[in-house]
Every structure is written in C-alpha cells, then in structure tokens.
Length: 286
Length: 267
Image 1 (cartoon, rainbow over the protein chains, first blue to last red):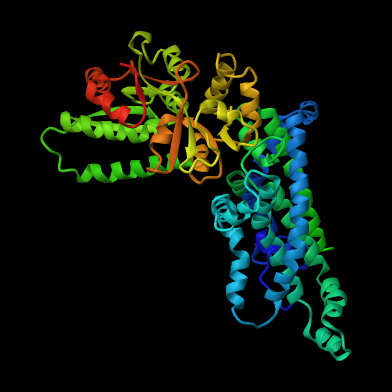
Image 2 (image 1 turned 90 degrees about the vertical axis):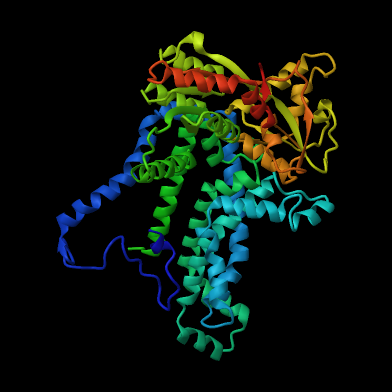
C-alpha cells in the first residue's frame, strides 16, 4: 500500500502495482487460477480487517453518540482537527519547493537531500519527539535562544503542530516529487521555447500536471498528522483541552474509559479509510 | 510491556542456552523465584546480588513487571515463590485468590512523593506553596497511573491542611502543562529542564544522574506514600527458602540497601 502512495520518482505517472491489476482477460491472474490467489490472500486481509471491525462491534451506536458529547472527547477532536489542518497548510507551502528541488533530474547532493526528506517516515516517532525536544525545548539548541525572546514551544499547541509537520511532511513531499518528476521533458522544452518564466512554468505546467499527486500527497499527510502520537506526547506533552489530541486521549483513556477510546478510534478509523479511498480514486480515477 | 516481553524472551533464551552447558556442580544452588514490582528493578537486583553472596546455596530468579501483571501470573498458577507488590490492592487480589495467606503479608517499604526541580531551578521553587504560583510549568503523572493518583490525593490533602491555601489543589493543577503517562516521563521532562517542577517518587529523583535534579520534600502530614508488600506464595514448593529470602529483605542489611535507593524503610 505504501508503495502505491509513495512510488519512487520516475519519468512516468505513477502506475500503482500491487492492488488492482492491469487489464487482463477476466477472471485470470497471471501465474495461477483466480480462486487460489483469492484464498491465499485471505489470511493477510482478515488479519487487517478483523481487529478494525472489532472496534465497531465493541461499541453500540447509541453509546458512541453519547460518549461523543463528552467534553474531553470533543476537546480532543477539536485539537486534532485544528492542529492537523494547520500542519497541512505548512506542509504544502514549505514542502512544495523541497519536492520540486528533489524532482529535478540532476543536482548536487540529490541523493542525500532525497534521503533526508524521507528520513522521518522511517524514524520511530519517539526519536522524532526526543530530537524536537532537545532542539526546540527550553534548554534546546535553538529553543534556548527562543526562550530568551520569551517564546517557549513545548507543551503548547505549536508543539503539537511542529511534531505533526515533522512526521507527516514526507508523505506530501514524496508524492509531490513524483508528480513533478512525471512532467514530460517535451512539454517543458516547449514552454521554455515560448518564453515561459519560472512562475508561469510552475503555475501553468507543473501544478496542473501534478495535481493528482499533490492532492493525494496532501490527503496522506493530513491523515498521518491526524494519527500522530509518539512524537507529540514526548514533545508537546498531554494536557486535555490544550495539547491532547485524539490518539493521546485513546492511549491514556483506554485503561479507565474504554468507551472514550473506542469512540475516538471509530472516528479515526473512518477518517483514515475515507482518506485512503479518496487518494486511490485520485491516483486511479477509473 | 513490549520491553518487558523482550527482556523476558532474552532471559528465557539465555537460560535455555546456559543450562545444558552448565558444568553441573555437585550441589546446584536452589532456585528461588521472586516476582517483584517494576519500580524495584534497580534496588532488588542489587539486594539479590548481596543475598547470593551471603547464601551461595541459593540462586534468586527475579521477574520484574507491573504489580498487576505479576499478580495475574500468580493467580493463573505461575510457579513463583515470593511476590513483592507495589500496592496493597494488588497484593489483596492474590490473597483473595487464595494464593497468599493473609497473615503472611508484610509491609516492608514505602516510597514517598517529592517535588523534583531542574538543577538550576528556573521556577525558584523552595517550598510547596511555590507550586501554586501562577505561570509555573508543572508536569505530573496522569491520574490513570498510581503515582498520578497519589499526586492528586496529596494536593487535596494539602488543601485541607493548615499552612496551605484552601484552593491549593486547584491553583497547582492550573499550572500543569502536561499529564504524563508514567513517572519516568515526568522526571525526564524535569531533567531536560522543560518543566519547572514535577511530582515523582523519591526513588525516581534519587536515581537521576547526580547534579541534574533538586528535590523539595513533601512533609509526611500531606504526603501520600506508595506501600510495598512482600509475601511467600502458598503453592510454592520452597517455603523455607522463600522465608529465608524474605527474612533477608526485612533484615537491617536488606533494608539498608533499599533505603540507599531512596525508599523509606518501615522497619
């Protein structure tokens, strides 16, 4: 699935492999009978599906609606939505130039910059949290200077947003890179011949042609930001009504208030499912 | 939990690897299996080292985990000789399941709450009432974990005590910038200087690297101590050995080791 959404940069538009299949005579999958493959795929599929379905079975719709009205639940939803939307805006604005840079065919340190851009996706979020804390914390490398100016980031909503950006941005950058790289050279040359300037190239060529990659990257980044937990709890702490997001409320709530954890889980699973569905539709409109 | 499982696995592998190779000395030391609360990890490891020097005929196998998890194991028939719990409630659950005799349970240790502040004390906290000063950044444990529960109890107790304003609890809680999910996260935020103060067990403050935290004591009349209980498990085949170990824990030298880790001994 990740391969689908984060394909390696290529000259062509990303054609997802794995899920779905290229057109073939109906009912046949290369290398064997259709039914056998379906059967063999079942264990993995059920492994994903059953625990998620279990969440929905465990809480009745009435209880769900009832819990949804609790103050702490509403607060967590509000903070999650607010922070993830702000994160997304920052990611798109700051991530687009980086993605564009990485998408250029050759330049100095390309592979290093490309790798750095991907690093946060493979780092454990707890590492990201510690790193942010010792950088932007009150005694941190940069934080100590900010502190002198009266700016303290840890334990604030800003910290929640920064943690989300750190973890979620690579999803957008990766997807946008692929989008930009897929713009054909002929088109670029034609535009240059017509005297298009840098801004016009971006506005009329790159952005429209990589539209689907940009949107799907943004959706992926947003849903990842919404689910961010590890870096956030380390860097931003946990204070209901101020920094407590949905994943944190689930983690701390599940021992004493399972209803609350389940209610929020249902919301997060639904959002993630819809977000992924949207992304798949954009990448493969048919 | 994951870490504990992993530790368990590694331990299991080590044991499995060691046994066949063992040189099988004529008298193999008798094993005593002790399940102890996770907060005793450092102190009990040292205590057992001393015990084995004193009693080379015994070998103590330690199993550390949350008291609740250990109680669950014993109640499900795990072959354990001695159980050490960090709360009375958990010990009681094993007594209720008839795996420990109520008369055998002994209170042997307590861990009190202290206020920990970073070495440079940015919030200038010298007494408990300073915690109520507006604008302070205070980090405590969430009330879902025992230490967080004790913290809330302490604040309520202080609010009703002479010398503290009646709004003490609310004022202090208004300064909380984060409710952490365990006590180690609280002390870490203090160590890093991110919080002006945190409320932790005295053992957590004592086991922090030297010179990184200062503490402000919480007087006994408002403190809410965590109590540790020890008892032999009824189903154990090694009652005498279990008793020998418990006697050592309760002895002066045993208690001295524990108090060197910041625990309050009660004997």
